[in-house]
Length: 108
Image (cartoon, rainbow, N blue to C red):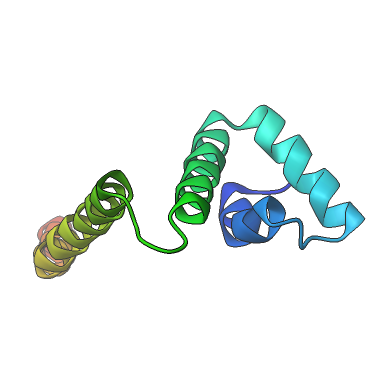
C-alpha cells in the first residue's frame, strides 16, 4: 500500500512511539524512505521527544524556545491563512462574474 503524506502525517506520532501494527509500521517505513519532507518531520518529532524526555522534571530553555518557535510558526501561518481567505473568496466571485460577462458578450 502506498501511503500519502497526509496519511503519514496522521500516523507519525504512533510510528515514532511504536504504536502501529506491523503493516502500518512497514507502510510508514516505506513512505519515509521515499519522502524527504515526511522524513524531516519525523526527525523533528524524534528530536522533540528526546528533548522532552531529557527535561521530564524541568524543561530547558532550548526546549521551550523550540516549542515556542513551532507554535509561533503555526500561529503566523494560521493568521495569514485566515486573512487571505476572504480575498480568495472575492477572487473566486470576480472570476465567476468575469466568466459570466464573457459568455454574455459572446451571445450578443
